[in-house]
Image (cartoon, rainbow, N blue to C red; front, side, top):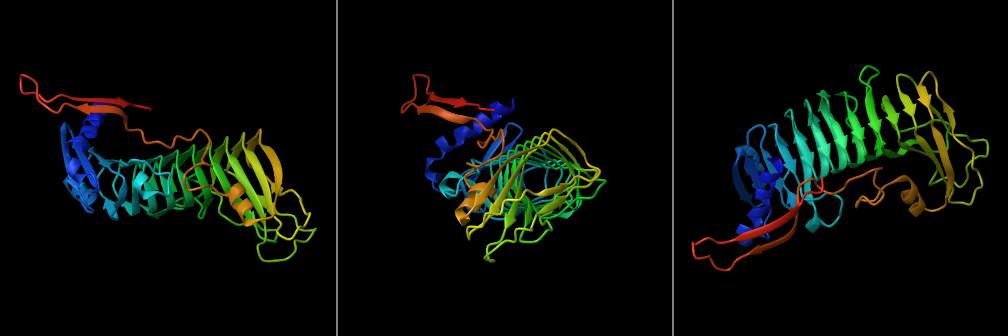
Length: 334
């Protein structure tokens, strides 16, 4: 039933060719479908929506807004810097329960006291929280900065790439992080301490990046060995660690990180090859991800879940019964 209703949404652009150059928002409420057009179309659709409705956004940049109803928001695509190919919202706040976001490029996503927030196939420059939230699930996403752990409970992150975490949860609200790539899981800058936050979590089947170096000093002491401390209740299972060093002045220092596992539960963790980095471009190549998602997470699905039109045709004249025939073929990839 869901895919049948979504397919009806795909008919809307064919009936509204005159609006093709505008931002378009489609509200699906039960069997009723309502289109909205223009810069404020998203806000207008939200205002008309009720809990359980589905809102589909065209490509383009939509105005900032707050989602205060339990709705599903589906964009066209998220992983490109070309605005003509993506759905983008520069700032979005979610304050309702049972909200789903999919296929949207977000400047800043702010979470305010939500339950059951599901985020899929989105690119987020920053995700942050302002009040307690429970059961936030992130899947198939690219995130530059994750600052939504301190007030979280039962957070799950899967098949995603998080450049780094900038806050930490509590030991009683441990998260689950699976099949993820975290390039800047730990960072040392010519000292023995490790920066960047590492949430308490069960880490499973992840690639975790340890990076050390200094952009500004002309040397790194041979005695310098970066170190990292892990503590329970975090657990590490079947992860791989990537060690990389920024040595712009030709130093040959390549000491491994020193890991203190403490009382953490761990199993089958392995180290990958170490890398010597001698240029800023190498730093981004090994320790970051591109905005189009090419470096994306393991098992990453970057396309939206809505069906894609593979062919369409509209008769120019009605038949003998006065019926105008429209034929659309759509492929549901997920």
